Structure formats: structure tokens, C-alpha cells
Image 1: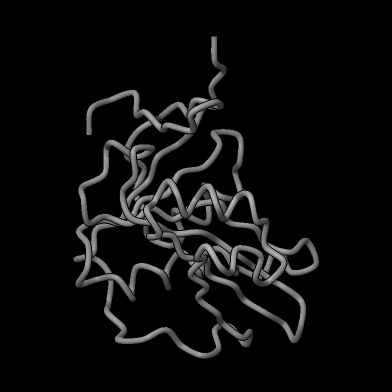
Image 2: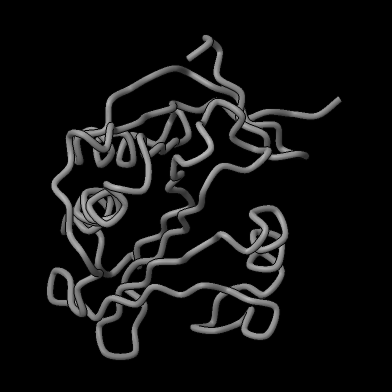
Length: 171
């Protein structure tokens, strides 16, 4: 029997977000890079090759990673992707934001909150909702999602083997 992780599921409607036409070169004083893994560059920016390969396969190449750099230091990274088998509750054109990591030396500066505000602004005309989830015990991520304007939708479980996220309530 597979174990599961208890999650909180959030979303923000595109109608609540102002649009930008292109990614900024710098964000919060850090160099912003949008990396799209492919079969030929799975380890760029010291990212994990196996994780990038799995995301590439699962999303049929529709995964992106946002990086913020302070010179050569990775300050923050997070994945975002369109709907996959893992997120059955999403519509076909929605975006899921997940697996965010902020360098411990840069925490407490509102980076995650601001990145969660930035990503939807680029996709306003491309989707109806942006989704995010976090572990039920991760209070910092919950606060960041709420400060970024995401609304709590449902509790959910993620199967640790398949990584499928299932809401408790029908959305």
C-alpha cells in the first residue's frame, strides 16, 4: 500500500492578475532565467538530471523552471507546468506551480511570495487558473500562497509512489 502526503490546494484566477508581455530580465534585484529542460540539456544550472527527465516525460516537454540568481548563486527555483496526469483537477490550459526552493541564506525576504505573484502575470491570457499546493505542515508556503493572492480550494493527498494529487472535495 502506498503512503500519501497531506496537502493544501490553492488557486488564483487569471482574471485577478495583471498581465505582462515578457519575463523581466531582473526580478527583486536578481537575474531571472526561465529554463526549459530538453533531452539535450537536462543538467543546466546544476539542476537534477533525473528530476528534469521525469518532469520532461510526464509533461511531454511542457515543464519550465524559473531561477533567480545573485551572481552565480541560485537564490530561488521553482517548476511550473501545464496539466499532467498528476493534476486531474486542473483544466487543460491551467498552470501548476510547484517544487519551489529558496536558498536558506535568502529566506525571509518574500522571494517565494513575489515569484508566486510573477508567474501568473505572464500566463494571464494563456490559462484560467494557476494552481499551487503545499504540505499541510508547511506554514511558510501556505502564507506565501495566500500573500500572493491564491485562495485555499481543498485539502488533498499526494500518493508518494505515483505523485498523483487528489483533492478531498470535488472542485
